[in-house]
Image 1: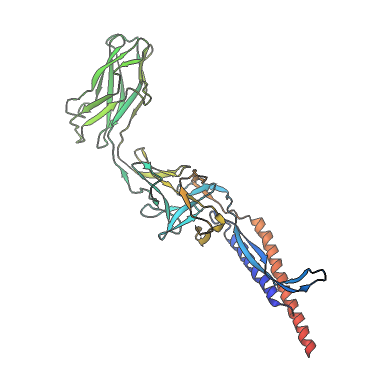
Image 2: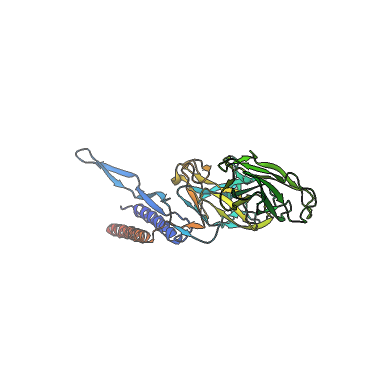
Length: 409
């Protein structure tokens, strides 16, 4: 008698294939969705004898689903205008905290909650490394990343300033040149400080640093001095940066303004020289700023999150973490675009983007589904025909069975 179970295994297996294809097509526009395919294998065989030469006579008893394989290849990248949108360019996964359980995802269509926490659309927290005073340490435990959406950056008084300038060696004794640079006190109030140079002799200039009248009531400290140059116009003295310049008694109630003049850059080269030509100041630097409120954030390819403030300052506030696993096929799909590690996948190796073979971050970008609609339609036709063929097998077995019964009557 024919075995209906053979055809039923075919119906069941191809039904699963149709489900898989339908799921792929349903997620055609799901961010970073990975295409799946169903593979089959035959079931065990029944030995019904052997040939004269001793070869076994075997009859198969159907098919089964041997696996659902996921295609983890890169989906196309599409740019957006939202800084919370991120895509991984390369291998790896974002790490998210779903109710205290660490999960992985390729979907970077993140958003901010009311507290500024970076989350997935399902509310899972995006994990990474928090910054301390603008410095990220990737050896610290992962934490949910938070954007300072309601933060105000405190003012910072000027601690150091520098001027890149040339003093005209042809200037007559008694000639002057001055330049102005904006500095900030501890309350964030700006002050237009003036540096006045006066030529006192060949290769010698005096300087005096002053604030506008009424900005400070105390007697300035160490705000005057002398610059000397060699015959080639290189600065000889002071031989080091001038520290301890102070303006006490700030009238706005701020702390005394105390700062250092960087006559030399970080490489030790003087920033002021003397040559024949018009005296000019081509650049100036200082490290103070007024207070500012949070404006926006951005993420670079290494996953570093930088917040921008209304005072023009930026601050590193954290770094996105990226995980990799030895066997991606061993991951369990848990829904909401998330995966869970298993013994088959191996434990997740978490670190900085772009390091250890992990992909880099593309900000204002989303990874698209890698489902190919034309391939899915072709697979759909094949699966449909296979299902219909197994249905026909059932009806054929039914007909044969009925004929056998009729023979008895």
